[in-house]
Image (cartoon, rainbow, N blue to C red):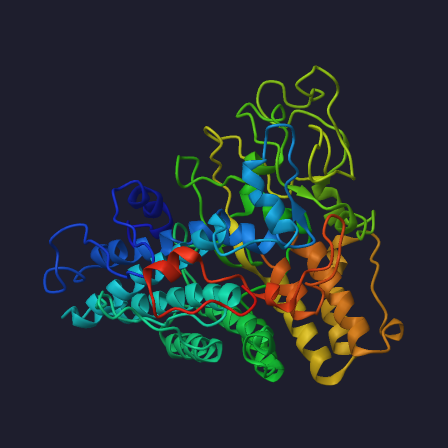
Length: 510
């Protein structure tokens, strides 16, 4: 593209006043008096139109969706430290699988997804009405269709059957009725496939983060990977085919060093492992916040929040020679940025800060709990807002998804082992490949892939999905007893949505 950079425009538009959709009302107040007849004609106008749909992806990198996927899993928890992180027990309810329909994050994730859908519906309707003959019009249309499919994937994964609404305006006297989970699945798959022919294969500098053909194929592979959970019918063959479309494109490869992916200097379209990312800037409202979420108050000049921690059982699964193990912080700590970088970090009482593996969920000390330092600290971080990219999909996800699908189709085989070892090779020096002889059953290799995905994608929003798909979601772990029923595989329809739309029905068990 010319001078209008989608990734750089997104933060600017986010700072503009916007009307947010609430409950199940999909109407949005337009930003101005533009109409399809006088807009969507130029490249700049097309870019401006789709930015709000992309901007909603910020809810994926930081927000209620992430909290439901991660803090409810065996990977991440947030201990209460004195008066910090109590918050009425909402974090503990997620970790212990005791959430209810009135839980604020359950409602927040629903709202965030439907906000993206509302924006997409409005843009798609206007693009269809526009007389523009720009060759970019079908490209942007395809991108927005994939974005809308992604938001519906998010809803289907969390809540099951939800209303599929494609109109920009709905009748408030006749609010939408829920579709079945199978119907949502069919819609998502259909939208991605319909969009694929019009998508670009790559974009130049300043536009990474846009939906490419590889991003859409990876989303399709992920939907198929979880198809049996969503519909009762597996789609392993389809998952392999979608993975192969990405692999055979030749557009992607693993970086030789795992940690390199998370370095600021490797962000952008030249990162061959990056398939789809959410971009951030060190500004309020559009910043990357994970340093603030996990690090101790005194480890950065911005005074982080000392919250998100890794559960002991999960930490203890790692091979200590795995480079991915080094992205977790345990033991004596240091200041990580600013004028005191490299000096010993102290707790609030002036003692040397020491992170411990074990931690209670209530009554934790400042140093209890393993922390995460996976992304390179941004030296330009401002007021807690960093500019790091957050990956929705990396190439390693495609390789491990194919390995899992092949195992489910044929049982343990060398093809699956080779894909797993391709991902492991850069994590060990010397290499520590796994051997086919050690896996005699489909379940044994499935569980190994689950562990490998855990090592590879710590805090990247996959863990709940992975645990449900591999039948480990309802089990007990470090700070959680066995779940109180299979209904916990879905979150409840938020009570606020039930109150607003009488056509909705609560998920069984709630």
